[in-house]
Image 1 (tube, rainbow, N blue to C red):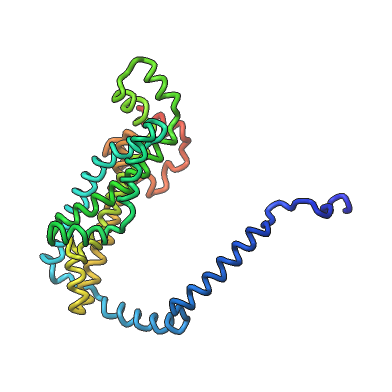
Image 2 (image 1 turned 180 degrees about the horizontal axis):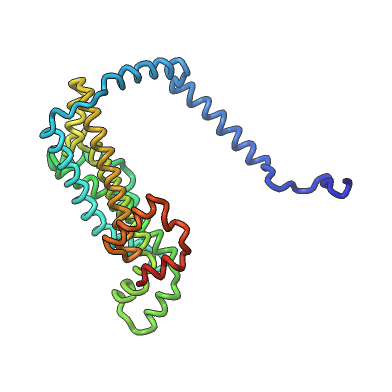
Length: 298
């Protein structure tokens, strides 16, 4: 018993230091101060819940009696998201490559990283307002705004992914006398391709959601329709728009899964459907990884 007792002055594992405790205390105090400054009170929260229940009651049942207006805005949002994603990814690839400090000298990487930081500095809605002032109302402003956002997001993550690669494969390709382009294609891209597919599918999903927000400021898409419905107090039509957007986002998530299966697992459409149905029935979930890899290789 005495041997199990910790000697006085010994370091205790998982114990917080004095600086950490002081930091936590300062954070708690500042949180309370911020809540008082911003009038964050339980009374306002309770009254807000009452207003929210009334608002939700007026949203149901949803009104789908304006299909032409609804689908026109949804189709424009889809077009904005697709164009912005394609343009953003195409432009982000070279910018992200130039920003990698393990492949490029500082006089090239720092301007590229500064461009990525500039694209990420402002929210897409603010950028959309700037483009609306520059090119006028419509979908063009939304495409340009979301393209800038795509360059900022994809460029940053692509740069970080390249900086984490193993340089042994790069040096091996370079030792064969390959050109710089071949070094990138055969030494760098195979190491980051899987992550890049994930970045691209997520960015498309993000652009699809952001196309609704930029439409509120006049940059095209279903956001303008949604904002007009709010102004008319047409809350049942608002519910129809929101439910349609949720369904489209869920379909986009399913599509992203298909894209990852095609590009990363080399599966055909029939094999993808077979695996999805088998997973839904709970069949084949315990198959060893080696067996699944053998099937994919086959």
